[in-house]
Image 1: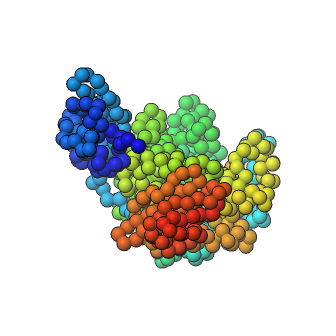
Image 2: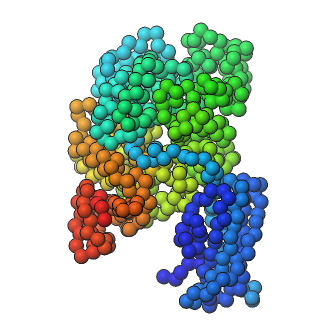
Length: 608
């Protein structure tokens, strides 16, 4: 194979590797074949967030190595923060030209110290209403006209009401005290961070339409119950992350008060309401901006000074108050629908209140190239998000597990590693499933081809034995990669217990206490505790050994420790070279004469 003219991932061509802090001088090198007769070259760099200012850098001939010419130049990033798009031109004396590019260089603000605790350990995501309840609550007097399932094992309500709406007002009564009771269970899984979907008072069971940011939803408990949960977490060396829903409130809320439940004048009752400026009315009081046109989620105006003061600018703001109460970080719902300076304000407030607090954003794409509302977002350039929900990881991993090529997974992950600042790559929230996706076991075992079936069918459907066996085998492999990959391995409650289900609300059923798949739970626990005790898995670099068809193998390494993760998602045995006999930690694999062989749908994790 001929040597490329340029390879952005090779230090011989570009140094330093990947994204760089502002002020870095980046050295670029081209290596064309000498026989091509190029005599000069230059680099063109476009500084996108500086009005597309263009800089040209000469690429000077420096040397010749075994029939290869070497041209080098240096780009000074100065005080710039943003994306640089660069390309090269080589030219011969006869006027022949070769163009190379265009490539992305991420330049971030490296002045701030980013806490590294989040990316090292395991995160466990809980949908609070469905995890564990300590009593059957009485919904009388609570906002929203709720009902409560008397049996924990009932199906969530999915049928529309007489108005054709699915209102999500059916509750199961999971509570904070129940989470506190189960902390030792979470500890046994190796969990270090608990991430809670919204806990503030709200009319719907998902609580993404906040009614009152100042209090825990009474069905979950009290503000004191929250402090107790945080204290108990901290006493076990664990942390808590809250879900911050700041792009919209609830129609039923203290602020909008669409149904008049609250005694104060909400924006819907009076144009003199203190909350009137928070919302954009096309025609007051009935026509207003809402999230994705959903009337029950009126959108807020994040540029309104009163709203910004309420969320993050004041000493007693929502962001700071709940960190003081015991939280250790915020996950920002629909982060790419919040203005950049709003996210920056949240980040600054969080750090001011608690220097080791983290801010993780919900973004479904590459966070460095994300464009929302016509604006290139600054999520990962420093002072905004410390990491993102890594949906690209989930998509690529599940594609591979379902028959794709491991080479594609590796390529997509290397693109992220190259584009992301190191703090963001290692603080990514990696997951196989969340509250917004099908249960991973269902996806891997039964697939998503049933999307045209009725909701009644999906509610009643359970996987066949063959589907479940297939799903469990692939889930074990996916979990192995999840727990060994850079970033925080995040488990959606019940995935470790073998829960199945299609889309919302079937992916939000109650945790099956007493009916867990114990073998699967034990596998997750073994992975979680291995992650907890192996420094290479917590913060090591990644080096790829094999990525072809169903075979994926990589090593995480720090000084003095090298941990191999190898998986075969295919239906035939797979081999790859390994120059040292591994010491198996989990799984199975046959090593002989410098190769390791994996049976179909198996994994091995080992020190090498």
